[in-house]
Length: 249
Image (cartoon, rainbow, N blue to C red; front, top):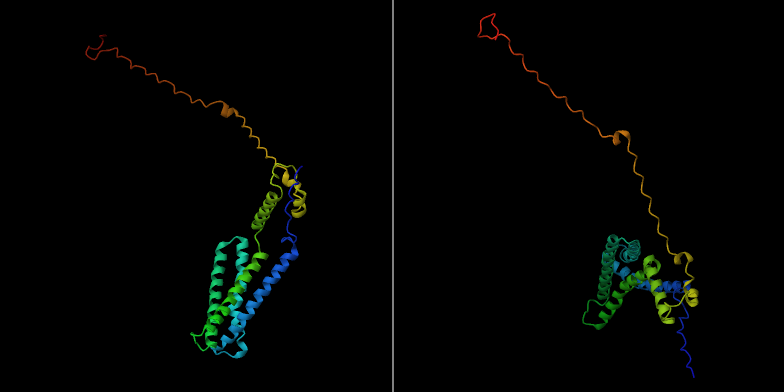
């Protein structure tokens, strides 16, 4: 009696790669971010009274303090997506500054509301809730930018890792089989035919022919040898200077 093979593990009913799943996650994160911004907006609006500016301009305080958190979060995500770390680090430093400023003002606003009675435990509970609002807005904004501005190289690596995990989970011996799995084709799409073909090596360029030698280059230059100088001896005198004239030697 043969035992039946165990059933293959079933995949998730809702694939996270579907568009509506991504949109749903982005909407939920945006709701959390807007709630945190609204909670911090009220505290900063009331704390703007400390500046002794007219009440009609108090709404500018949360825009100035919490607004850069959203702006520089998007800027940080864009610089990271482009691969420019110098500007990304600058945006992160600005984010840390404005987040710390918002947390500090919210903390002081809670202390001011309780008349600086630090002995009451309710003060610290209010500080925790007020301080977590800008931090939650920052984290939510970062999550939205990661979902929207994902690097293509990182996305390809995630997709390759998912395919490898699916191959190992459904068919451990998939490396020995020929042809793709139909379930993976339905999930990830059929691979391109051009990706399976190996690229043919580019033939090397033929060597250039050597130039033919010219007559001037073929015949070496011959320098003419100098003609020998023949020295002629001086003629001997036929008449001795010691003999008298008329007598030859």
